[in-house]
Amino acid sequence: MGIRLNPYLNFEGEAADAIAFYADVLGGTTSVMTFGQMGMEGPDAQKVMHGQIETDSGITLMVSDMPPGMSRQHGNDMTVSLSGDDEATLRGWWEKLSAGGKVETPLEKQMWGDTFGACTDRFGVSWLVNIAGGGG
Image 1 (cartoon, rainbow, N blue to C red):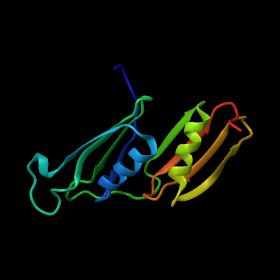
Image 2: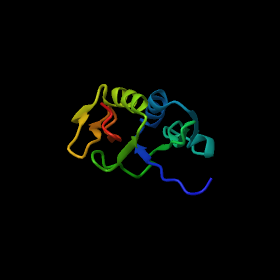
Image 3: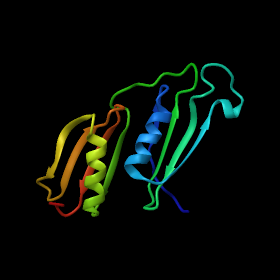
Image 4: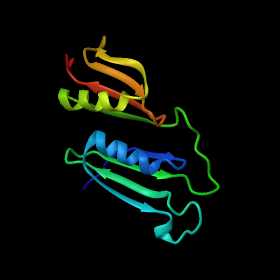
């Protein structure tokens, strides 16, 4: 496999919904393990201890709910960057990621020649999308 870099997103009880949303956006295969599957009992047992999406295009995204006793700093604690030259795919992902969220920078041609946009999705995760060579 070599070395790969992938984001790992932490949630407070929303990881199952988030992984379903991101799998719908990106496609791929998901796997989810709950705290209960690892022996935890009680109200946190159904929370996601580890979730992962693997796509055919090589994207890996991991998610989890915060374990009991730990809190997440919601906001600009994580940014995920998607970049490449597959304009149709990147534009499709942008549309889905920005739907229901907030667009900080519209996806449009920038001074460096690429098409770029920045948004925060409905879960509060910041995304950057860069289409090489202008994409439009």
